Length: 248
Length: 76
Image 1 (cartoon, rainbow over the protein chains, first blue to last red):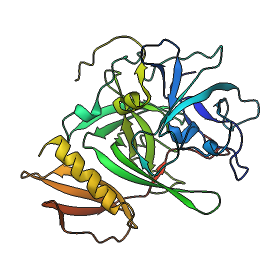
Image 2: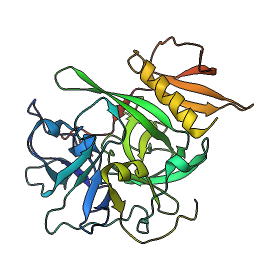
Image 3: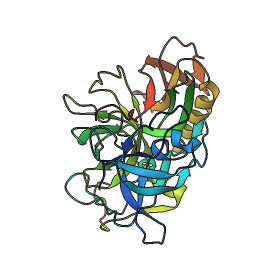
């Protein structure tokens, strides 16, 4: 499996519904360790997902268009940031162990991603940066322009019982797609990572602004959190070739 | 204005208004002629102060935001 694979929690939510699906981001390791782990968003499989209400921590790989009982278990949630559901969100990320036999690639465009992250919080503000992401939705790989000015974003999530959950993301960045027919990200692309033209990792997709949920507009922006914030919060490192980011 | 000062103003303003109906996002952006302003995204009618910490507050209409997950029974 690799970036953009469909992932979701095992079991059912408190209303008896299957859990929502998202995207696998990238393999990572704990700082100073070698065991390969999986990175995705906490609202896909971890503390901010509907699976957090349950005792199951298994993560499944979606192999077809629909989720199936035969979908394999690929790992278990080890840690999330935040640890428990809360309104004010700094990171929104989970790290997942890998079951024996599960292996990963880290190709988002054509080359493997660098193990050196690019810190969005250090970039000059007010610029547009060419970026890419690979998520579970067709066409998988998309291109966009990331606005380097940090923003705070409120997200409201309707639940099956008619209530709504509000999440306040304190810091992130908007990315607008540059392709004629496809937005940068769609529903299901949460957890996918964003890279620059040097294949240096910049961020993790967590949210979208959607004008019409049934008919996404190419200009609907995605919202990403900085990968450096994710790595620091969960004490992780990227893996891959030790290649400098020439665009820095 | 330093990056840290802008970060502080943005997060303070966000916390101040995040419970307001229609308040969606905020950023501190540079003015073309120099200085900065507070750029607020709103999903529907919202009235805010005209300035905050000496920075003008400007609003524009945006679409609602959701987490980018997909219901499991939908086709990908």
